[in-house]
Length: 143
Image 1 (cartoon, rainbow, N blue to C red):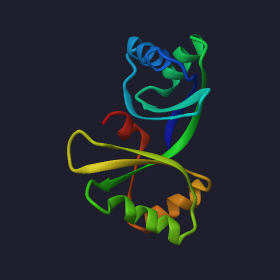
Image 2 (cartoon, one colour; image 1 turned 90 degrees about the horizontal axis):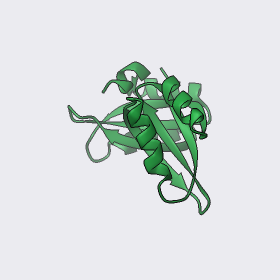
Image 3 (cartoon, rainbow, N blue to C red; image 1 turned 60 degrees about the vertical axis):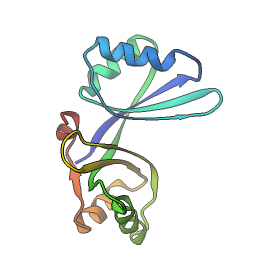
């Protein structure tokens, strides 16, 4: 049920993000979702892509530090309060969200929230018992 995400550590300077997207584009890798967090010296670019292993390979070949982690993708109606219902369920079960980001699907009225939890298995039980739709990686990579 988990989704593979890559995290790329990049220097916080002009052109680095453009370089990464160029490398991925030239390798025919499609970015499905992304999040960028930065400090004054470096950034962490988190990506959901259609080919995780190929993305890791081409970026490492160009000298980037790349890690693969598992995250959880939850589908929620794209309407006011949609995210709140998920977070209330997680809070009720005392599950900590390490980070999250979202995107809206091309078709349909749903958003997809990407979560990283400190206790993934416990979070999956909580989300399933709350009736939330958890997306398989293959479906997410091809949206």
